[in-house]
Amino acid sequence: MKYVSRICVSVVCLMFLAAPALAGDVSLSVAASLKEVINELSDAYAKSNPEVKFLKNFGASGALAKQIENGAPSDIFISANQEWMEYLRNKKIADVATISTFAYNTLVFAGTTAKASTLEDLVKLERIAIGSPKSVPAGEYAMEALKKTGLDKQLEKKIIMAKDVRECLMYAERGEVNGAFVYRTDALQAKQARILFTVPQKFYSRVTYPMALTVSGIKNKDATGFMHFLQSNAAKPVLAKYGFDVK
Image 1 (spheres, rainbow, N blue to C red):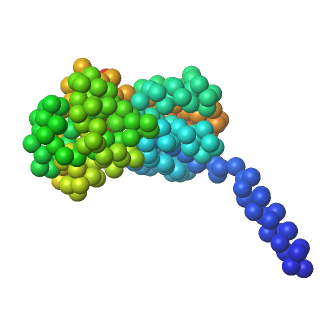
Image 2 (image 1 turned 60 degrees about the vertical axis):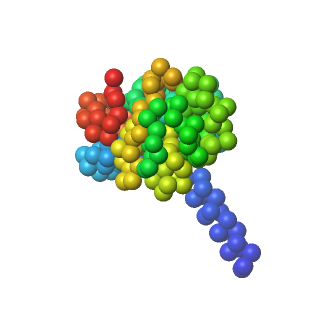
């Protein structure tokens, strides 16, 4: 009897694992810097579409892309740079026809007490937080700026790597570093840290947030509906509220 019971339990488990996502579920894989704006937009969408339930995964764009590649459920992917969207496009995971630009952002340097008003002032500091450039677009943009100004070698022993842009901000908020490279929208959410200076645009590529349905997401009508909502004029005031640019 115990043997039969074990077989029954195994069969039930297999049936559960093989079951498709519930109707109305929309899985989102979104760059960490978009957390507040996506939470507000998804809440607004759910009010008029109460049958839709959102499953959200926020993190570094590179980490999210790798998770999706390895089978993590995702209907919509929003990256903080073009590189990781291109990565999933080349893997034939992001649906090419649905790739579009969601918003733009600006790179800033934020801290609590550091006296720095230009990139050149960073050499006076002891510790600087940057998102790991291998997976965090904010860190990649920051390193691009440091290389273009010739400061990368001078600062390499001062840099503290973080897993995403929100961890960078946390280090700055706690005073564990003198300052951190983050997006303007993140700095505006800070309770302790403030923007010390804006990184001149000429030193790095424009911060662009591409979004797309995945090849599995295009089969989900609720995901398609939310994607259209994100592209609509209704989303723009919310993006602007949090400091994002839409042009």
